[in-house]
Length: 335
Image (cartoon, rainbow, N blue to C red; front, side, top):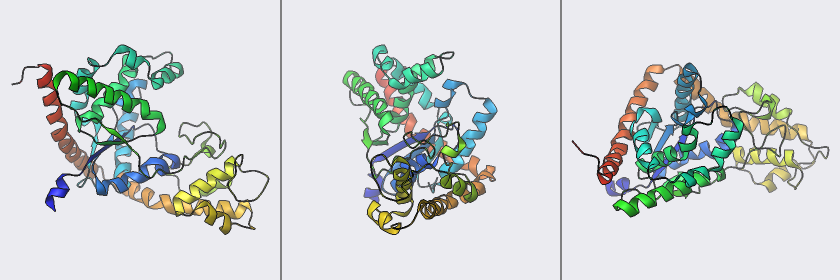
């Protein structure tokens, strides 16, 4: 039995501390992390190194890093069973990133769509870190000899460049890095904006009614769901063009496990008022335990620091073994 325990495949997932995740982030990805933690050797991290490409306020970055770490634990990720860490507490991430920068072609990095998008959004701060961001991401993944990385469609390119870099390095120096695969788990529905249901729900939306934060209280959640855009038909069923209703059905399905067919039957002959109330209550029930556990953890700074230290030690143990191997292969003098 012990042997099986040791042979678990490795999953790595990092999240940036750039504000509180939305219901969309939670149902689409975070909710699945806890399920993964039972069957895999999991590394979950707060990607604070990635978040300085936009020069955040230092005090904000410290606070948000702590909050995101507390939120990961509040999801039910046991810090003793999994490795839950803060990226900057493991220096190997930045060290391997520099080595891999030298094995990444300029043309490869310049083709990354995220670099193009972010350069257009922040034309006054197109820094080298923004350009080399995918290489740091490759370092994150390759350090842990990761088998699977849960990714959204927008990060497919980053996994491809990671595999290309690893392949190139392995081709030159022999087998050093494991080639990671995308993790295709049971994905939650793609959750859209409550006010513009053709757009993805986003925490950076200027309209706070458009998204639900995972830490919103029951009252706020109910208000936001009740003000969600629907249509004039007043019938609950899925159909192209009924974007608002389709979105609420997706949310309700993720929170209750009910199929579209069951939802249509449940609200047959009822209006949107009843439907929205039910969706709101389901979301409240889903997020309440997370919020309550987060509030308990965030007030216990000593416990969070202790978990961060344990996470950094566990992550460093694995990361430094890979880093030393890569450094030796490149020809760095070992002492």
